[in-house]
Amino acid sequence: MDEIQKQLDKGDQLMQKAYAHTQLEFSKIRAGRAMPDMLDGISIMYYDAMTPLNQVAAITTPDARTLIIKPWEKRCISEIEKAILNSKLGLNPQNDGEVVRITIPPLTEERRKDLVKQVKNEAEKGRVVIRNIRKDIKESLKHLQKEGASEDMIKKAEEKLQQLTDKHIQHIDTLLSHKEVEILEV
Image 1 (cartoon, rainbow, N blue to C red):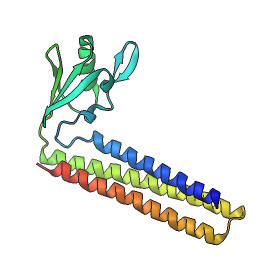
Image 2 (cartoon, helix red, strand yellow):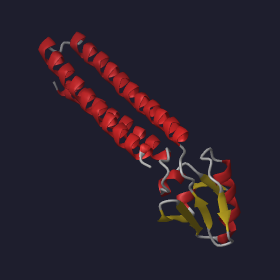
Image 3 (cartoon, rainbow, N blue to C red):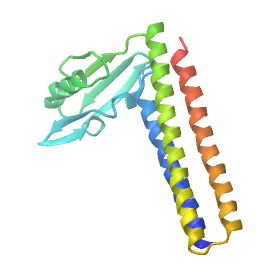
């Protein structure tokens, strides 16, 4: 029984990680609003090491369409600007010698639809990962049954596993619907 619970707990933890990853991917998809976490995937060369942007600068949003990046050291400004231009975010940074300013352009209707497709694709990837985790844990439970665990205990564990799967997929679906509303909001 103890091993069965361990497998269920392992499945739950892995599913939570899949949900968290999906949430992270969603945060990278901009919804027309300036958000500091849009720049989370960007790193710059800082003292001979690749360092995340948020560790070398303060990133603020004075309004809904502007990001301001104020580096701790002014010598980083050109590196920051270059890293943002080289990222696939499609942002156009301007620097005034003190800070890097990014104005987020409003989204067109076509771009919004593309972003919704991208979000749906990320959600489906998350669901697939959760289903694969379910499949792996189910195989582990079958293996435990062969080692002597009772059939009833395995059936109950599989039911709990399905409930966990449904719960985590529901979380992703909720996240998806919120992100769709955020993107389509004008």
